[in-house]
Image (cartoon, rainbow, N blue to C red; front, side, top):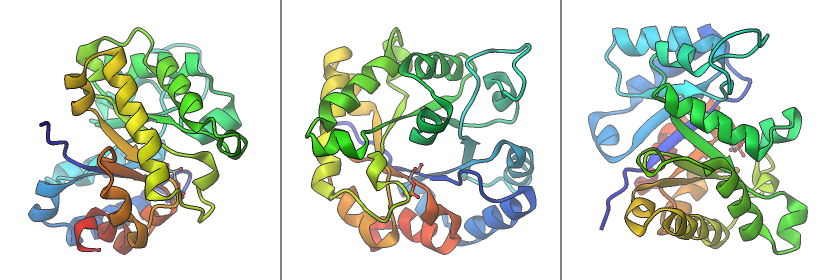
Length: 258
Ligand SMILES: O=C[C@H](O)COP(=O)(O)O
């Protein structure tokens, strides 16, 4: 039986400038203990403009908190105004990068094909992609959440070899539960996270599927994290709004105490 270390990742979205980021990470570092880091991997996905400041702090104080970006370019370099490459993120020692967050899919037209290219770009530069998948309200109401989400998973993983796929993180985020206060029930989360693991077993192997961490995201808070984490196929959370409050995020990291 594979033991998967839970990953609690704060997605700050477009919040906290680099000065606020330093203060925020310092608060997390002050609160989190070795015991926390032994039980849970902790990461923050910051705006691009914060990454150098966070890197300096993490390196200088030898912090165990991981950090990463919320997006990357599918391209390595060149005339792509406004884009940030995987190589640039790797140079900043990012561990993680989110790919295909629903806000990127919704507001920037990101398709499964583009997400797949971004997953490949992340792996090429030694970053661990957090591939985000999940259905909107109309799909949920039609009862098609599993098929819809698995199609996004298939698209994102196309041509990804097993040795890379076994290190990917999948974040299941039902769009209707993001920033709405409308949290999926633990059973809702388990239904789709379990189906994702099943599909990973079909695409690769059960052994590989047992290694991959699958997060839930959508209105996660200290008050609901324990029930979500009690589900067998949920291995962490991608936390938006609640990750902007250091005390709340630390409570989420300590989900076993809630
Ligand atoms: O990436 C995080 C998700 O979009 C969830 O955001 P939320 O916790 O504010 O609902």
